[in-house]
Length: 251
Image (tube, rainbow, N blue to C red; front, side, top):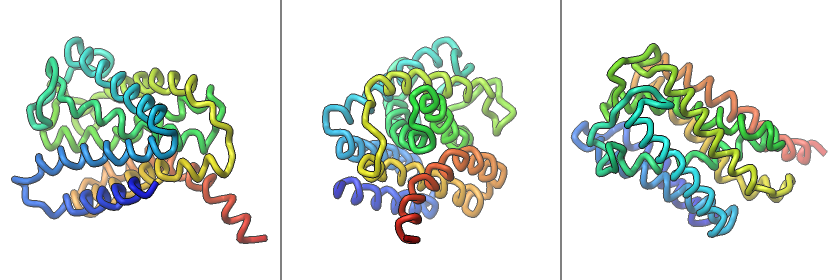
């Protein structure tokens, strides 16, 4: 986990520093942060689950998401009609390669958060799908505003249609249903400690996005809605994870 901790600290510093960069550097910084977050997520997954299983989980999530993005750009399903600009770099059939990273890097944090709330597979899968979709409540409005992609028909939520979030949820269910078949680790404090890095990624994203939208970018609507969406998963997961420690201290 030492490598992950170093990468996580670097990621936090990069994301905080992003707010102070001049506009001409923001596109390059965005690409770099996405890559850094993917590397940090990969380091966490391999440390927690081993190189083979960790890589399999992230590659499966990223590959599934990327395949659905290809269908989405070509057909408008399941996200609705949208298109990418060239700001995220090279791609395939209109989908930038970095779209793979978006699905891969936050999937395990969402899965871990859901497992802390309720580890039963039948409940965990839709919870994890909801947790991952909640992150997109922050992601899509900012990326649309900064012209990384666009919805020609617009949408009621900061130019994003409801179909986008339904598509995210449906795609996430497919990803996590496959994970449920692979993840058979028993519950327990050792497993919880092993997953603390993924929990930290989710909690930091929740807090960081809320504060940035509220205090830096002056987007209070997104701060409130996104903060409530991610907080609905982050807060109970953190409470479950911290509860055993509180009980031990009280004895």
